[in-house]
Amino acid sequence: MLKSKEVAEKAYRPVKKYIAYLKGLEMLEVVGITPRTAFSSVELGERYGLLPSDSFHLATMKEFGIKFIATDDSDFKRVEWAVLVELEV
Image (cartoon, rainbow, N blue to C red; front, side):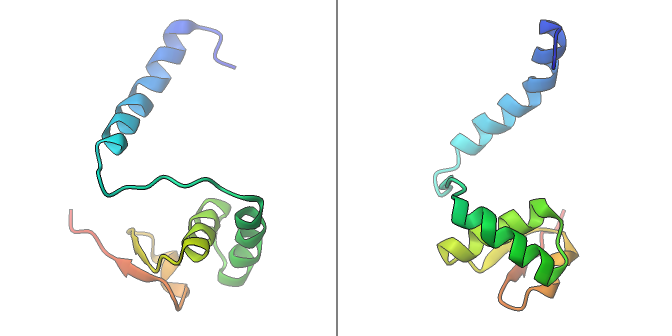
C-alpha cells in the first residue's frame, strides 16, 4: 500500500497522463474483461505459451473478433490467426 500521498501522486502521475492520452483517441474503444474472457485467456495462454497479460489481450481479441495487434512482442507470432502490425520507432 502506498502510505505516502506524495509517493502515490508520483506513482500515478504517468498513469493519469496515459489515460488522458487514451481518452483523446477517437477510434479507441475500451472494453471490459468478462469471466468468459478470463477463462479463455487461460486456455489460449497454455496453447500458445503466452504470459497471462498477453493471453488476456489475445482472449479479448478473440471475443471481439479482432485479428490485428500492434506490438513488438514476437510471442504473438505463434498465434496463427493474429496479424501483427509491427511498429517502426
